[in-house]
Length: 121
Image (cartoon, rainbow, N blue to C red):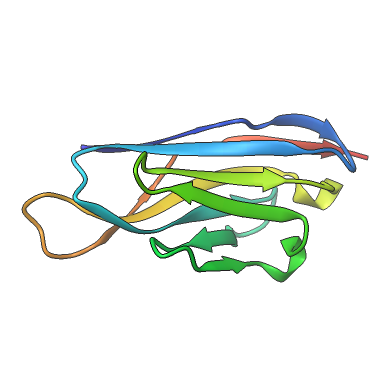
């Protein structure tokens, strides 16, 4: 079994900062991409940022320059440092991992349960 456990959400004023963390645990052979998605009220889930095992990153245009993703491959963790937060960043943030489990030759997507981020104006 694989678990993705997020932490670090909360309430912050516009212009403030938050740091989200996610740890993947369980029977894991290797993790390719890790990242964060979010779902705002009344909207579809959207990509925030991803990072590959080699360190290549991809960001949504709306967060470039404000949010920074990083990972620790040895600990199977991914972190999202969020600065200069805006009310439109309010959403449930989901940790994502594309990983391979023992006894398989393919990678699968796994998701955390989500953590709420609320930015007040």
